[in-house]
Length: 333
Image 1 (cartoon, rainbow, N blue to C red):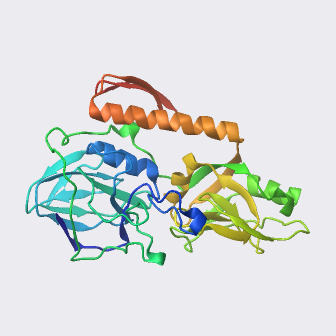
Image 2 (image 1 turned 45 degrees about the vertical axis):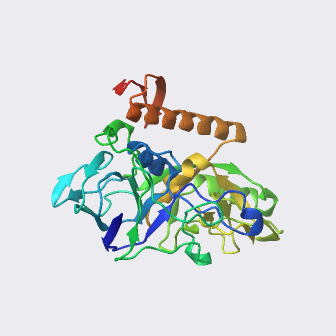
Image 3 (image 1 turned 180 degrees about the vertical axis):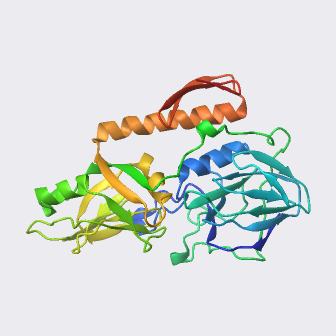
């Protein structure tokens, strides 16, 4: 069991989300940054979809009431019993130890994974918090969480080298999109504006959607409104004011604004980790290209999982433009 001593910002339990309930109006929810969350789980030997803690900007202070192995994913300072320890590495904690998680230097969301995951009652097949519908609630100081059973030996000391860590620094992002499906609701100039101009993430952004500011995207005579139709995370709606809104993990399941594009699933975490003020540019790709990008990312995550587990398997990994070979607990490049 762990006990939360300080919770300075939004802190929730999340897993990979609810699947199969969107037809009933239930959002997917789940990790805002599935890439970092999966790596956090791999660091402690969990399946990639295990429930963990997601914090917004500043992490909690917590006490371990039993021995556990944990890892924190994020560019953040950590202290265990007042002594600095490293993120992106699995650590052993004994009963009574106190973990302090600081403020992220880059990105918006960080993750704390525990070997065995977090035990919780699944609601509609998931532990993910979706507070708008009372599917769980944000955590607060004094809450206690029970960890799942895990053999801890061998799970501590796993370390992700810096060159394999996602980089969320910088104030600019290129986000790839598939255009459509409501392009007839936009002028050619409006589509060109969307693809050529720079937009800024606004403070009015949250787990439901990211609002962008920038040049107005022009609508055709058909206007901004459509007959309400399904929405998915990544869908880019453009209401009458011409300012794009990107749907995120807690987005509603239907909407009545025309959609100019959809952010590909492999880039949604990049947008999720963009703080207000971050500049965003959109790059079009087709469906086939998006699928190839997804397959490459999955191979990369398989390689990272194998690397952390010391498996005798080799993968080509491309991270930040560099190609690596990961195998048997080593990285060569």
